[in-house]
Amino acid sequence: MAEATSKSAVTGLIRALLQPIARLLLHCGVTWREFADIAKTAFVKVASEEFGIRGRPTNVSRVSILTGLGRREVRKQRDIIEQPAMRPIYLNSATRVLSGWHQDPDFLDAGGKPRELRANGNGTRSDRGGNGNGDEVSFEDLWRRYGGDVPVGALLKELVSVGAIQEVRPGRLRVVARTYIPRKFDVQKLLRAGEVLKDFSSTVVHDLTCTPDEQLRFERRAHTIVDARVLPEFRAMLEREGQAMLERVDAWLTANAATLAPPADEAQRLAVRLGVGIYHIQGEAPAETRQ
Image (cartoon, rainbow, N blue to C red):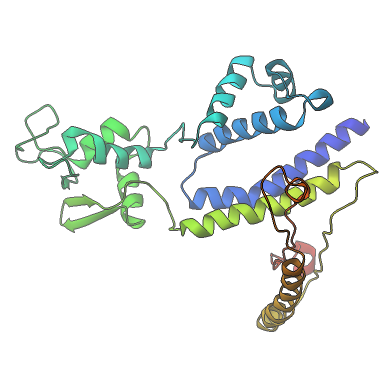
């Protein structure tokens, strides 16, 4: 019974953790299938590197048992981990259409660039490319080849709304992006966000899983229900006090920064990455407080 309760609590934790992650992924055009593939790789990587017996690397059979993945899938994921850069295994309909527009010879001009397309079929004969009936290729032809089960009208409307496709004149379309991202994000901001989420989640997981002999890492919160009209005052206070604390921490870290010599040096062996993060908490008040 206790084990079932514990697993239920873990399931609740995962649901809470994944909601903001799912929000980010949907904003970035990442589908659940792409996420599932990434999750497989993460499971295999952690099981392989951190769950070996007596300090030895985890073998394929043990990783299979730990993760629930077949041995063949474990080997596949290990091959992906060893690659310098992972490529998406699954591309959603929007990305497939944009990629086809940039790569399929039937939709390129004589110079190898994506050509303008008619929105619908039944165009005039083109000097290159076609839909098999002697007509100029159209977005509908592109959709039939790469669009999957997403309706052509809905797909076109979405791609236009996010700026991936432009209507240069009535009925004529030009592609201006190679990948589908519903809302533009700066790449550097995304990379930084990944580091922030990794740092915070690593601290939380460490405190949940460490042994009694290990020291807990500092993780505290201060929050309550307030009148929304005090938000500007709270932001100003947090910017002032939070920044001041971070500057004091930064000064301490600078004074204690290690001078790293080659890997054989003792200072290199003992070096650790150290720091602190401060973040703003804000969300809807529980329903019982809004009556």
